[in-house]
Amino acid sequence: MSKPARLGRYQILGEIGRGAMGVVYRAFDPQLERPVAIKAISAETVGGGTTEEIIARFVREAKLAARIVHPGVVTIYDAGEDSGQLYLVMELVEGESLAARLRRGDFPRQAEALELVAQVAEALGAAHQAGVVHRDVKPANILITREGKAKVSDFGVAKAVGEGTGLTRTGTAVGSPAYMSPEQVRGEHVDPRSDLFSLGVILYEMLLRKRPFPAETLTTLVYQILNSDPFADPQAFGTLPPEVVRFLQWCLAKDPGQRIPDAATFATQARALAAGSGLASTLGTMPTMPIAAAPPPDRPPSASERPRGHRQVMWVALALLLVGAVVSLFLLRRPSPPPATLLLADPTPVPELVGPLGESWEVPTPTAIATRPSAPTRTPSPTREEAVVVLPPPIALPRPTATPTPPPVVKTYLGRHGAVFNVDPEEALVEINGQVIGIADDWDGKGGGKVYYFPGPGTYYAKLSLAGHKTVWVAIVITPTAKEEHADVDWELEEF
Picture 1 (spheres, rainbow, N blue to C red):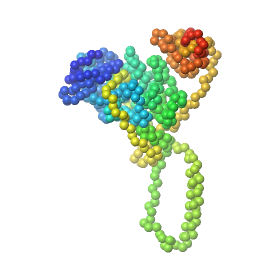
Picture 2: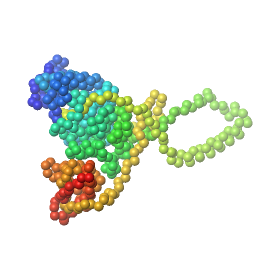
Picture 3: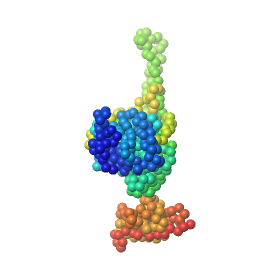
Picture 4: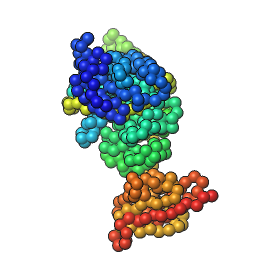
């Protein structure tokens, strides 16, 4: 797509970024005399109807997105079509995308990452209240201003250019589908919780410097999103606090009904973690109502004013108080029982609106993201006017277990470092020591397939399976004395 001189009334000054489906330009609005950003998309790349229908849909979705008013959302000014190019005129944000920051290895600290996703959640919440589901929440669509504030872009764009673009368009990189929710991958109806799943993937990536579903092929990625548990190995989280891991588990629940319910809850809990108070103090805590103390008398009576008969009672009461204090000290040393869990309101469903689109936006480097000051860890008792937002009970992380003994293997292969899988049918699923690595065609060492490398010498068990075929196990022995560099797993699965 060559740079046009103008789009509509807007003068094109230069290119800001380029993605799979369009280009973002720096432009100038001569009528209002202000700089703007313009996202241009060729109508030829958009499916779902005639040119007139596509343009009408694009403008309609732009109008819906323009209703979102929030400082964390990139404002949409205008939309139109010029010589077969759809264009969206937006607020020009001086900064860079989160994708650009992560690509150069500039990962934020834990508190910064939590504050950043809290800001994004607040912006998404404003969109959800306006009836817009983003459906393409990813680092490329999160812009960071020079002041370190997050702004979410591309509301309405993905839906405007057609459903399912991230998984069906030829040549689309795996990067955009990597942030999709399971229900979005399956092509089902999505609601705001889908956006929050995507935001959870981004938080996981920032905190651990890797994605929860690190596949390199689309087939493997889809399988991982639908089936793999990124929390199966508790050792993978290092020094990450357990409450943060539990928060990530809540965000990345595959069942939307078990997932974090709304953007407000997401932002509140992320900020609690960022402030250092942690979630332990707000999880499973039954609220208590303050008890008003009886007002003291205007003046306590003096000793001379007390009746003589009451002095003995006073000494007895004082002795009882001392005994009670000793008992209280003893009881305070005993551990208190775990508090009960309080659940609040269910999420309100919001109509579906948008879909995936892979773009990037790169401009000058911003300052560091502002973080909130640390807050005390004690959680104040809620008042009648305050709502307490809590997480579900902590999820116990599974303990690593030894690899189970597989059934008798049908064959043993030897190699020095890796293995290739020349399996028929090539769609057979390959599982090594209980970990799915994809289909055989992805690891055949030819035609785009890769070599699977093992971490070191030893015996590994590979499970080969496919619906309608008999499952088999093979043993792969990695040893420096092997004749071949890579074990050639050559096997044909037998049909039932």
